Amino acid sequence: EGVCIIERVKIEENCFPSACMWHPLLNGDYEDRIVVSTSNDKIKQYNADDKCFRKLTRGPTKSRMPIISFLPLASSHYAAFSTAGTTIGLVKMPFDGNPKREIEAFAHPLKVQSIDVHNIGCSFLASTGGLDRSIKVWKMNTQQIDDQEEVAVKQVESKECCTMYSDLLSETLLKKITEIFIFVLAQDEKECCKEDEKLDTGLSTKVHVKEIPNIFRALGFFPSEKEVKDIMSQVSMQDFTTTGEIKVELTLDEFIVLYVNYKRSRPESSLEEITEAFQTLSNDNSALLSWRELDKFLSEADEPMNLQEQKICQDILSINKDGVINSKSFSKAVLQS
Image 1 (cartoon, rainbow, N blue to C red):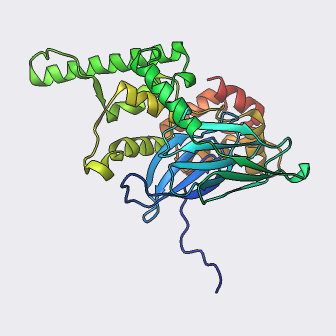
Image 2: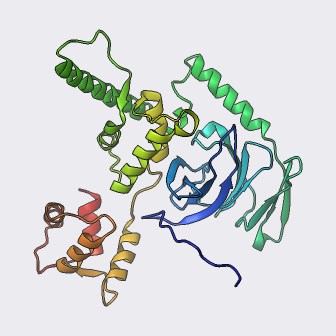
Image 3: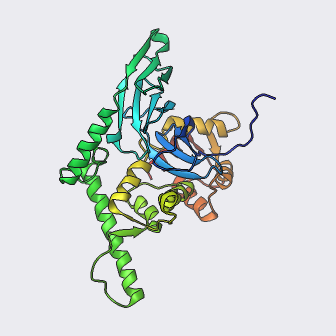
């Protein structure tokens, strides 16, 4: 009777889903997908049938607030959204994390409560402000996104900037990414030369997908095992629905897009969040944990540590088997290690 839950699928480890929508079928796409916005400013896509992960991109909000409403505009390549804060916006599909394919605007002084779109002609969006006792009607101008995307494409073609994602990367970071990528290319070339017992006349411009997690780590981003699995799946399957081929290599430009989308937009954990976690895990809400308790949690987590990793963790925390540690000491040891 009524609405029944037919399946439960775990999709997050460290954050919560904040909004979802069905992805419209665009450009001959035949796969039904569910789009999920998360509290860590990411947009994830899953196959609607088997719930397999398909793609992750950065959220379209400059305010870095979670999206709480997602509405595709009828017969178009755009979706409207509102955040948990004071803004609304438009983003162009398919989602790729490109900052030139999105716009965001201040809507209400306190908080946007809800939005809806006029789906005949896709011209208007209505937003409610709750405590400000107002309803606003907005005329949507998708041409603005097309224009700013066109300008960005011309800038890249004329070498005024090296990538459409330049706004999200400092020159220093972009240089570091390029240097590490070229180093990995050179190392792969040496290995190929050893195997073939001959020198190649030119350096390849693509790295194997297996090198992606290593490049991420060299840049200071340490993905979890689940994130590594998702990254490899996204790269390998990104052309499968159109070409039927598994992708095994990617260029520097493709890697930059991948890195921009996966890198975290805010610190992984704050002292307040760690303290709250300690209070939840401790029996007496004291935010104090013994090593035996902590060791048990580490060995039974979603991604359990092996004995060697547990020993390294114990050494970093400078705690003996009978000792205890509070959230402040844990935070100082882990976040600064």
